[in-house]
Length: 637
Image (cartoon, rainbow, N blue to C red):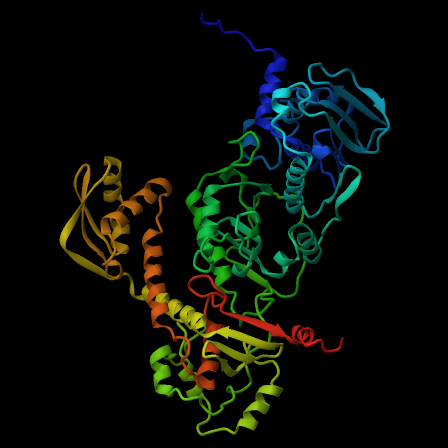
């Protein structure tokens, strides 16, 4: 028998809504803290018991709720944050649906106490899951609001049995508060669990204080292996911290991305950031970052998910390209020769509530590296010291490394070691004299000057800080690879016609995509023609990919174009070929190099983007400063 259509009871409606908003104690904590932040709170105190299953209490010093509006705050679709469609389209608050408090109250014992600063005393309302809130009653309370949630899911045992152990639920709640604290540096956060203080974060008004908060929440390791980035273009503004590739993770547990101050998980943004790291990251590793994207609220829709974890961008391709280019360029600037403070000394950062407005300084970009370079000195005052060779003719070095053209800048393809050697004075130099120059040099190049080879594999060098070890093959591999990429970008992708065109069956929509993307395929070195609604012919392929499967590559490109309106498959395939060529064409282990040739390789590394990692993501160099050496030999202990 078919049941008649009927109006659901209000209690059941609230419990259904709670299923969308309240997943576990961490979900409750997130909603309550976001309400406090929207109320202008400058200090937040959170108390949990049994991981939040027994008690969640959030107290703030915000604007408070007047007596006559307390009961209304526990009604569905009641909010002070929006009043019209135009405000919904430009919402800048963290919460706005007006469903959190009634949904939480439907599955818990909730007490709401509040006092606006202008009122003499506070008032509170209560609800026990199945009862309408009683009239407000007086209560002692300082200016601000306290929301107390007890016995979560006490009246829905089917939901309660899905909760995990106290420890697991507390870890989720702690992570939720960590995300909120990383989004608002201007607010103080305190967290207690079972009466024990866990987190105590004072407000952070400048970058030094913000980085202290980072160290406490994300660890000293992240702070010591990251760079600070600030850039703006096309109405978008990006700021935050990027971990160096050497700080990669086995899982994506240190990836925080905020849009207008709201922590989100966006597949498009995640893919763009993953691709930006792809050329410098070791396989099966994940990057770490903390990034804030500011965009005009009109250009992003935050009303697409009940928990507001997802957003929809009006121009997703622009956002994708902006994130990819800015992060890739920021990582490429991290070279041994890069200064630590391109933008000057650390100053104040934007730690206040996100306005959703992009930085007007279009095109501006500043990087401040931490742990990215072994030294901050400028270029050496004179040519590097010359010492007796170790048996490799300089002519052979020119063949290995190539030559830098006169007047070539640091951003152009790097030259070879022979050129630096040739730039110095001719004739032999005494060993003692050269050693003296190396030992007394100050403000020299970041990677210093070569001293010797270790087992024909590593270059041993000395800089102002201490001892530098360089993986000779990995370093030269990156130098050659970046030179090849620059040449390919300058000369374009050469095309090679197939002797026999290869047919490929496609869906009619993919066939239309081939016709619409003809120019794109030609720029990539392909010649693809549609000969039937469901069939195309591949007549030419990129010359470097002549040995690849053209039909498979074209199909992959079409799949990307259908899903994302863009494809990087060909670029990635070309880079893979160039990486292999660079690997095979780089100087091998056990190859004896002269000291001038080793010095020239160090100078090339300082001028080459991404020189901190080889083509496969392995580190190319490391430094042991004098303190580390003293500890190693227990000097002064």
